[in-house]
View 1 (spheres, helix red, strand yellow):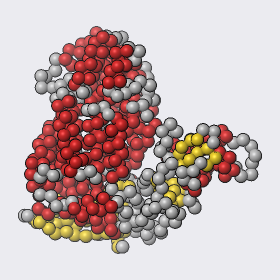
View 2 (cartoon, rainbow, N blue to C red):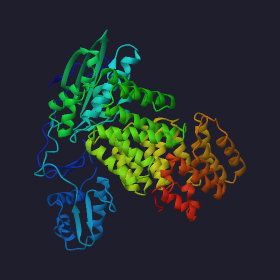
View 3 (cartoon, helix red, strand yellow):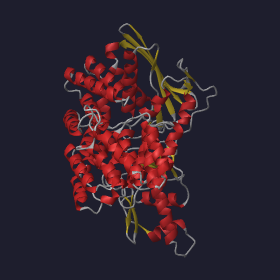
View 4 (cartoon, rainbow, N blue to C red):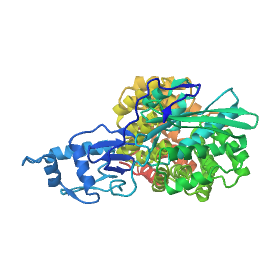
Length: 599
């Protein structure tokens, strides 16, 4: 270990300190958590959980007898050994605090099961402390890591998407270690092109180490220097690579493998096999895939259409390219939200690509994520979607985007506490993500927790004041809180920069709700008479009709929405704007057709 020699675009720490001493033994791990049975410290994916006292004593006792009933009297004696008073209420409160810290739910427990009037049982599988694999078999101090975008000289777009693609590959490879929390792309790419101190970045992101690198191209030769620096400024690993540009894909697996070996990270047997076999694709296909990935991450209509062309080129060149097929499916699913074509056309193509990706590589997290989205949006098979999302998370525990996708399933099907647990985990992995922040506000809105939705949307707007999705969600929550003027103002503000049918429908509904029905009805015309090249989801027309009290028209629009497989229908049972229709048997039948139930 030596002090970092920084890349020209970043600055090393000036006052390195001694390495952190090894962790104490007797750690037990479960689903991203680690618990020290001696010090009673609970850590989640590299972060210490803010909880102390009685809940930790309860967790210790449950973990000492996993899978077995721990009675209420046993826990009472552990917590209050010298008292004979009835502490049932206090015990219940301590268990609730523990569940909150674990983001567990009493109705659908993942960790702590309640046995009525008898006690509790820890039901999750364990690792470490005599329960199988160690939870932190890597470097004692490195349990979390951020991979910064590779930098390069000049403004060549081909070099840029190559650098971004290699960075993506390293993130995805390292994220498959269950013992390492890897910060997601959206957060780390906020540092792209910015000159900042690596140690400062690491501390801001609450990680133990930061990986950075610089690429230079000379003709058909590529050079890359990379280093891994801890938050005390010490270089944990560094290397230089010189190779033909056509061998660039081997950098993803080569760097990932070297870091895993140097940090002694535990990778699953499948992940290790994948590192050994990937990086051998046809270079032309690989380059087309990277360009598609670069365009996909822009999340813009034109870029998504171009990304689809790139992914198709990669597949034509290499029909067995599972990752390109999974990315193609993902792009089709995203495009379905842009109101360009009837969603059934796009989602049927997404299903074909996702199914082929899973068939080619059943261990590919992105393939299961894409198929989960198809099941959720196209077939409304929420149980199948959940299975695929959970499989993707099993293969890649740090897949923040999948946690957001899975949260949508949980929220839409009436499991708000579970949805918020997943969103909070996504935010841990992607702390600067505006999308994850808006998702949190959206799910609070769909859970009818409008005050919480307002607070969360405002937090996102503190970071990005004109983020349209945050302003739209804020307006929705204002409206349901009776703050109609503020809601209308938010919708109008969004429409100054983004002409989206969903926001127009929200404005019309809010106007109708506060008695301005003539203005609301006037919005229906532009929705129906938009450009012939655009698709207007009938779901939004149903929102307008519901606001105007035209229930027959709302039901008719929802039936059209069913036939078109509108992607917004997954929110039908939770959207409070449809509340007046809940007692209508026809509405209830539409809800059942989407695979949902009214709460």
